[in-house]
Length: 399
Length: 70
Image (cartoon, rainbow over all chains, first blue to last red; front, side, top):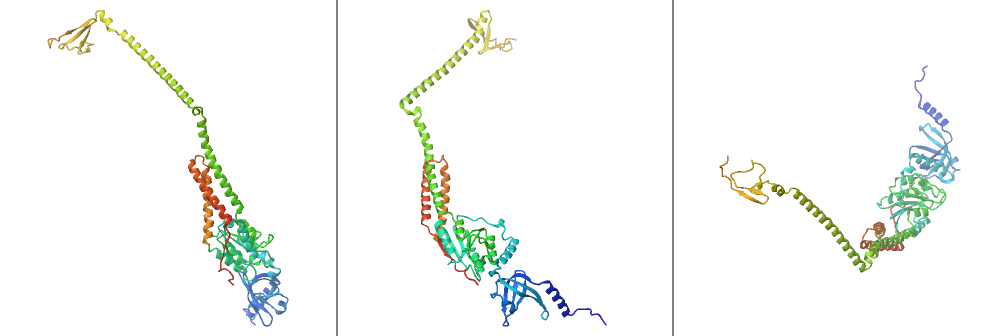
């Protein structure tokens, strides 16, 4: 008797079946329906998926009778079921016993699920939120063209800042395909180079009504928008996923429009202020100049011509006095200098010496101070105190 | 659409000039003739802006291509 070296496929599959079916009982999961096929027998076959995986599902007629809606491809549902393995095909599936449309009571579950997922991905980061310009030229709007929200936004814009241009990307904001329609609207507005801000929104409603703004498609479109987005969905209390992703949340579409437009009255009053300031500045300028003119006119000198004359004659007197002073000083100075020169001359008066019997010799009008200087062959002169005698030179007869 | 764009653009250009004039006029050394010229320009621009603010009506452009893509 030989022990088997291998398992049969049946045996392996049976073991897998045991493991999976024991391990995954009454799981509650959320996913998107695709490939939905209601069988003539009444059973439902479809796939549930999300971005990362998919699983085959079945819901037997006995169970799905209790479900009060029929799933459609693309709808998000929450189901409870257990894994079953079907050995003839070697596959496993989720055998669903309970199904809830997230639109009919379990939306909150889906909401939290997506919120957590996108939060982890960083779509709500405050760091990436952009500033909203409040003096826009063009505002993009993604909403229903027939909704009250749009009419409200138009009247707010007209009241506050009628110079602005609104560019509407008409979108379905509720029901099947709404999320895709909103996403397309955002993308279309992003084609414009000069839109300052986009408002996406709609009026209030039930959670189902607002659901398009809680879908991943919408969230990603908001995230990917080049142009800053204000999310304005429903009433003040309603928060949507798109509110978290958007650069700014407004409580209502009306509030969003108020947020992005300057108040016409304030702009007008600023313009009036400018005009007042212009006037004030010019008169300040003028009075600055007037002051200096007045100062001149009122100055004592300018007041009467007599004063001018008096002033000038006084000036003249002063000038004369100054001149006198200068001249006196100079004359005195000059006199002193002359006197001292005379004294000096007197002290050197050679005549007094000559009178004592000295003689001085000049030759060619130069004083001869030594015997070496005298050229004996040329004529020279003897100067006495009372006259001079010319001596003819000896013409080379000296020594 | 073109007209409105130019309206708001013109408005913004005027507003910038008004702000500039306001600053220029603060300079008390500005010569009087120049000051009066700036004053006149500023007043005209301000009044034009006020007028367009009062007279304007929001222009609405509706895109065709984004609706209902299912």
